[in-house]
Length: 330
Ligand SMILES: Nc1ncnc2c1ncn2[C@@H]1O[C@H](COP(=O)(O)OP(=O)(O)O)[C@@H](O)[C@H]1O
Ligand code: SF4
Ligand SMILES: [Mg+2]
Image 1 (cartoon, rainbow, N blue to C red):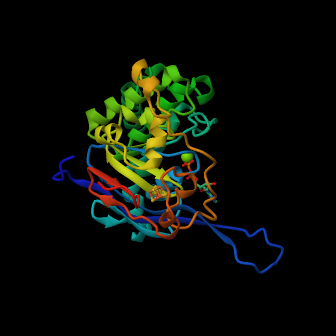
Image 2 (tube, helix red, strand yellow):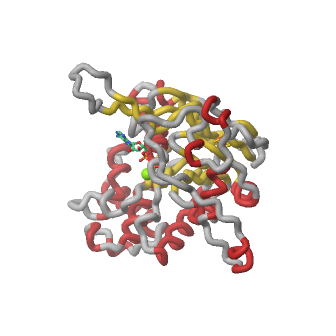
Image 3 (cartoon, rainbow, N blue to C red):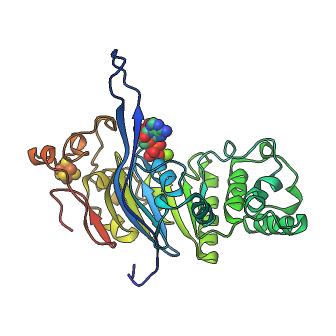
């Protein structure tokens, strides 16, 4: 990744802590803090695709929602084209939201069942540009439908009449209609049949290339992000543990957590597959209410030392490859 590319989004030390009602019998006991995102930095360049991976519960969705403004950041900055969104006034924030769209995991649940797909796709356009005529809106909707591979004659149908893959195409058309600069795709294919997943990933990739969009592509396993990402961020328990150019990260994963995630990805060559060192992830993800001291991965890390319980590693390296581990150099 050449550094002369324009930085679209610069997220600095982003934290999202939720207050959880205490289970204690004392009526005045303090609520606990659930650290869903606990200090993540990313830079997203114009036109690039950033994959975000990590087990379920690692904070991927919360991270995405905080960038878009669907949940409030507890701390940190979300700098969009040089301006901190978290400090913007409502009017300016609303304007910025036009440029940032999101696609969700469950395609059917994210579409209003009582609206026709034409109205669903048109909704953001009508909200932001109420002055547009009906014909102008309809033309734009049809243009978006064509772009995602939907025939114009289905415009008056309802979401339940479509398959999961088609519903996700509707979601993509809706996300595209305001001509955004970035789309965050939160596990957009996890709920789809494997045979349909590649079609949707390829569609997103084609659109991204044609329009020069930036994509943040979230998935819980690495095999899905492998083919679409320029760079990949690996999250664990609300922290960024490794980030790097996709090719470099897949060829030379450095963090013990990334290595464990990668060993779960099947390698097509049976000779390599048989000889592969399996670094299994043992145990469950610890609770983000009471995360381990020092390095949050230490309770499951095969390389953990006494020092790992004392000291919290910071991320070191560059945009090309960075790692957060006391015992790994980049
Ligand atoms: N609104 C919320 N209130 C309290 N806890 C939440 C809320 N949203 C998410 N969490 C918790 O934050 C953690 C991260 O969740 P999430 O961001 O959904 O992870 P992922 O998308 O990686 O599966 C989980 O422990 C989840 O239970
Ligand atoms: S800091 Fe320690 S526990 Fe954490 S990943 Fe590195 S070796 Fe493992
Ligand atoms: Mg999620």
